[in-house]
Length: 90
Image 1 (cartoon, helix red, strand yellow):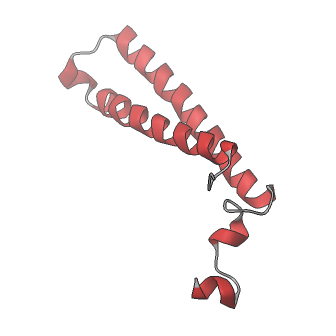
Image 2 (tube, rainbow, N blue to C red):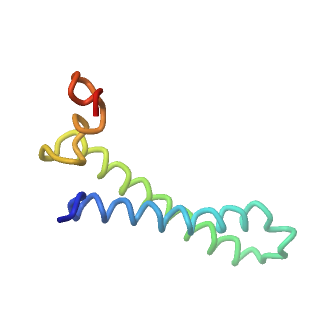
């Protein structure tokens, strides 16, 4: 039995993949002179970095919206935040 449903798994894996790709791209852009990147290379890296940033932001916003408005279950905000005595004991 799966703990997380498909949308939660998808958004988590998109976030992981986006972060794994955004970090080296950002470092490459930061160190572009040391790496000797051409202007067209920098432009391409910037475009890819920006597109991945939009994917990350969309995935994050989708997960947050699902956490607030999705069905009750393991990914709902009420199951994450221990508001009642039963949840605090758990």
